[in-house]
Amino acid sequence: MAEPVRFELATPERLFLALEAEMVVVPGTEGDFGVLRGHAPFLSTVRPGAIALYEGGEISLRVFVSGGFAEVTPERCTVLADEAEAAEDLDPAAIESELGTLEGNLPLLREEIARASGAERERLLSELATLERKAEGLRGKRQALAELAR
Image 1 (cartoon, helix red, strand yellow):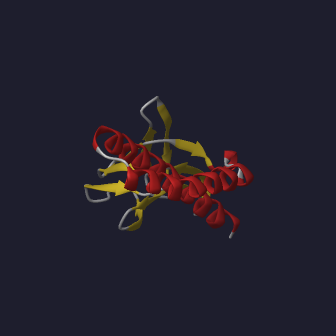
Image 2: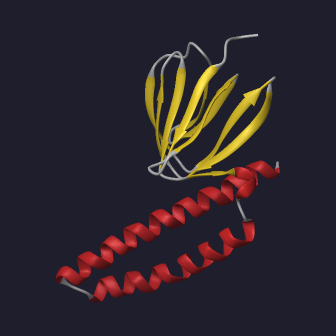
């Protein structure tokens, strides 16, 4: 059996997870990538999705991340995520409800932006960017749930 790779997942609030795994698969923005011990060093951005940790050739744990950055060295994989949540804690009904509300409000906010000017327009643009990031994270959670169901 190959030596395990150290995996650490941190959010702005705390160290979410630190353990060793046979392999880690991370949802990179350029595609999913697997990390084994001895991997070449690199950095990647992370898209919303599920990180899978493997033991014995099987997925032993999945953790949803809303995006962030990953650093890989030959000994470890570190993910700095905006937010993280155990995949089994995701609530499909709550995700769909919140996403539906957000997607319903975005067109109204865009209309407000079109009519606004100056500082008010800048404030609304900032709010729009925040809501779009939140919607992207919710879509990522929905996608992660679909992948888990397979």
